[in-house]
Structure formats: structure tokens, C-alpha cells
Image (tube, rainbow, N blue to C red):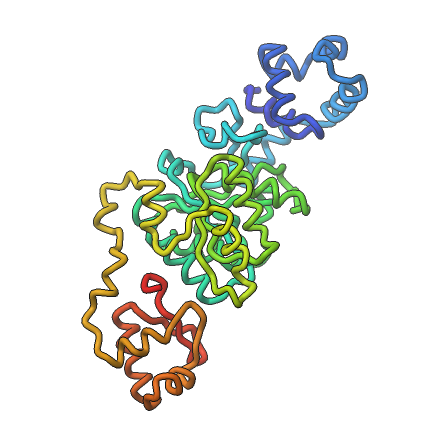
Length: 370
């Protein structure tokens, strides 16, 4: 068997992490030699007798050919830390995974990636921001990384896919258990596999545990040049991803949120603590330039919407719109205009990309205008 099989074998043994695997490789010259080493030689590593016995017991129960076959059956492939195709940005994080399970493809382009995260209970505005930013960044050649979670991250994956770009989903479970569970998530995962990849560091068959999400989050930030937090509550897991990003020396970006709403309090706290406030993708590109030759072609000008020739009524309605949905009745009361005028004006603003309906006669300003 190849050396990869032994990387897999040791990664499946409890309490034998990447550091110990490297120690075994350095001491024995190869992991195959380490796998077959007797106890007396293993004791030269300085490990406790109990640690060696536990490893020996688990090793004796593993059939490496069977484990490799399990990977093939779920249509995945393996990357070990010694593989030249292992994501370079992950090599330098603290405790990189010894083994990655991958379905899909990894490209050189993926080294220029933005991780987009946020709450599962996203507002329509938050989902729209995640979708649009990811769509426009993907057009510029950035790979979008997310956790496949409902809400912000699912919207980010879809934005990248609809732009014809690449996206990567990192799982808190084995690669054969797409999480969150459900047909909609499975369908999204299949689209991602066709235009990027789904990957995990967890063994096949593993279901997510509370600690799995923190481990997953460090990979999401570790694979990216920067992390964009779109919408996050005070205890959102997205803030954990941002913390990992800071520790790993990655850029952290945040979308500002209404201070009266708890849904985005985490974003405002990040900005207060030094994250870069983002109003448009230009704020991200300034810190992490695109390598795409089409960057200038696709990059929108933040002043485009402000230069439009709007009528007095159109400007009046637009000034009343913001990030939080407002009902047409409230617009009519605030503007002192007839409902019919408000509706026709909103239609014009929508056609010009300045306003957006979020259902139930509610409207928001389009993100690029804010």
C-alpha cells in the first residue's frame, strides 16, 4: 500500500494527531515503517506506556484496505499533509489536518478564497447581501468558502454557483453525511461538487458533535485569505470563525448592522474590535486584490447609483429605504404620497437596481446603494 494509506490509518487512531504523525514519520523514516514498528521501538519516541498500548490496540483493529475502499465508495479522494496538492494555506495553521476527505476538485485558484459566514436565521437582507457579494466576488475569480449551513452560508454558495464561479463547502461531519441534513442541502452539495468541492477532516460515517463545528471553522478560515461576516448574533458560530481568522493572520471583514436589531450585533462588535467595515466588494478587493484579468470589468463603482438622474419623488422614496424592510403603507405615510405613486416609484427604483422587494409589500434599499 502507498504511504497515503498509513497517513489515513494513523489519522483514524484516537489521540494520534498531526504532530504525533510527523514525529512517527521523522523517527522511522516512513509511516509504513512506523505502522509495523514493535512496541520497544515505539517507546523510543518518549510516549507513555499507556499511549503506546492504546495506539497498538486501535491499530490492530484497522484494516487499511477496507478503509481505502470506504473512501472510494463515497466517491471521495484523500489528501495527506505530505501531498503536494494539499491546500498550502492550511499547512501553516496550528494543527493542520493530517488527512482531508474531498469530493470534487481543488484548483490553484482556490488559494484566493474568501470565507463568507453568518447566522442560520438570516434576514432576507442578510441572505441577499451574502448572495450578491459572493456572486460578484466569484465573477472576479475568488473562490467562496462556507459551511453549507442554512441562511447566510447557503446563500453565499448559491451566489458563487450562479455566477459560474467556484465554491468550497467544509463539513463538520464525515464526507458521506452532508450537514445540515435535508434534500435541499444535498442538492446544493451536489452543485458545489460539480463546481468546486465538499471536504472534511472527519472520518467517514462521523456525525457532527458540538466540538466538530469549532474544528470545521478553523479550516474554513484557514483556507481563505479573509473572512466576511455578513450577519451574526452575539453568540453566533460565525464569530468563532472570525476568531480563528484573527489567530491565523487572515483579514476579517464585517457588514454593519442596525444597532436596534440583535441579528447583527456580532458584526457591529467585530467592527468595534477592528474588523474592516464593508460597504461593497471594493472594500474586500482593496485588501485582497483579485488576480482576474476581468477585475476592472466586473468591479462595480460605488458611486454609480448616486449618479443616476432620479426624480424628486424617486429620491424621496429611496431616502426612506434602508437595510430593514419597510411596508408601502409606512412609505406612503412618511412621504405623504398616494399609495399608487409609491408603488410606481418603487417599480422604477427596482428596475434601476436601487430597491428590492422582500415580500408582503415590504421593501429595502438595494445593498449597493446603502
